[in-house]
Image (tube, each protein chain N blue to C red):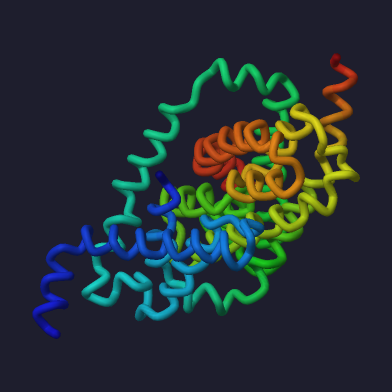
Length: 51
Length: 248
């Protein structure tokens, strides 16, 4: 249900001003996601040790 | 013409439902036909929302045009909180138990890691107030956690838009990257799929990414990703915001 609400929310933000922020969105998204990807094998390992 | 605008203005919420419905339908078609389900329809719809917001004048995006004023109500705090509460009611503890200890660790770690990595980068890119840093860090969790947190802590509309954009890029990135790196992280069993879903939080990206990797793993990843999103909506505007305040 909340996807439509988020669509409406995104349509009512100050996107023009946000675009002046430039590369922030792209850099934050790619870096943060990559770090999370890298951590997955470690948690899998912890899980194996516990079992 | 003026009459039509008056009617649309008076029935703002109904017209907003129609507009969002059309956007969702078109995004679904584009996702299915053009990208062959490779890019989640939700990410396309939200990108489209950000795109039309660009044509509004100033702070309120498309809602600054009278005919679209209802969009502010549909995307406002009342319906947002309503949908969060109704989603939380659907979560069952027996399902969480299935995820096990590793699942729980990944859910919490996925939020905390994305939040602080996002926040630190934002800090070095010139954002210095706790509200903006918290909102951008929350956007690094998912495109739902970002705006929910931004609205809760009272961040500016511009920063909320950035946090939504971060979440959308993350969703698309996860979708594309998953099948490519699935072998490297041994994403071929339900347990790893659960850890993967918890770490990446974005339900749409995780579902689409797993669907492209192995259809059977989708429910496991989607389960922990959904909990992770809920956990993000809880932690970011409260404890994590408090921690950021201590540092700034």
